[in-house]
Amino acid sequence: MNGGETQVAHGDVLVRFVDAVLGDDQAELVAARHAVREAVGPAAFVDTCATVASFNAVVKLADGSGVPLEDEKAERTASLRSEFGLDAWHKA
Amino acid sequence: MFIEADGLSLPIRPALAEQIDEAWRRLARPGTWWNGAERVAIAAEVRRAPTCDLCRRRKEALSPYTVDGAHDTDGVLAPEAVEAIHRLKTDAGRITGKWVRSIADSPLGEERYVEIISLSAIVTAIDTFDRAMGLPLRALPEPVPGEPSRVRPAGAVRDIAWVTTLAPDKVAPGEINPFAVHGEKNIHRTVSLVPQEVFNFFDLDVELYLHDHEIRDFSIEPRAINHAQIELIAARASAINGCFY
Image (cartoon, rainbow over the protein chains, first blue to last red):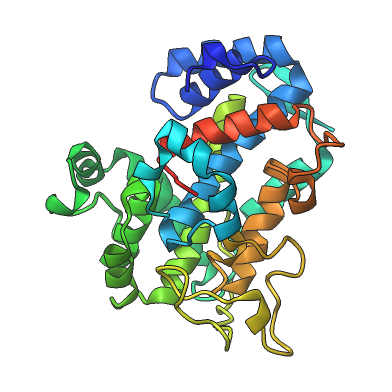
């Protein structure tokens, strides 16, 4: 996923921030945090942090339990998963 | 409501702030299979895992199952619990059914393992939020005395997942219904062997992310970022974690 090519408002800044939060480079995190706050504003920044937190956590439930994707979700996302090669991750 | 972070006073939804604080306090209360002190010890181990040398070597290896050794730990919890906590924290994307069964069949037991899954997720969520915000790691709460409830749902079976789960239509009369508030998707079934943990995690998560009915209602934008931005963040975080679901 190339954050620079997203059509989502401030997508590149958001992707950079997610990478920084989940990465190990503290200086990059500080810079990315400043960039996203400037781009989206304070309330949106807090909700961005909350969303990153949610998805860094909920993956533990899925991966730790081995619960499968629902059949109807799998059907709806089949072409998308194929296009991005996501089926290679299929464990949970 | 405002939260002080990184030298700034930032607006935060009251429900989000309240659920984060409540989830943190709840860590220290007796759970279903672990008491308060044990739950806090689990939280401490979640925080210790990223600097564990064994976990680092396993993460770097082509397969984590080829690397043996001992985890860096303070020795409070049994080895099987430490193994579960460290793996969930540092390399959850490569957990296998075989490994889960080995943990479930160990002296740890499946119920305690499932409660560990939830606790690991909750601590990860709150620590990630604080890190993202530029806040320091919050102090672990003081354990609250009391015994675990040891409630196991009668209708739980091992069918769709590597762990035993409770299906929404198998909740027995008089038993706690973990699907009553947040939904009946497979993600809600993940820790349903320990029904209280479904509430414990999703009471927090619906404020971090979205309530179930909000996820696909594109007529409303309940957050200061829109649906597209939320899902971009979600997809990126999931991709980094290698999570298919």
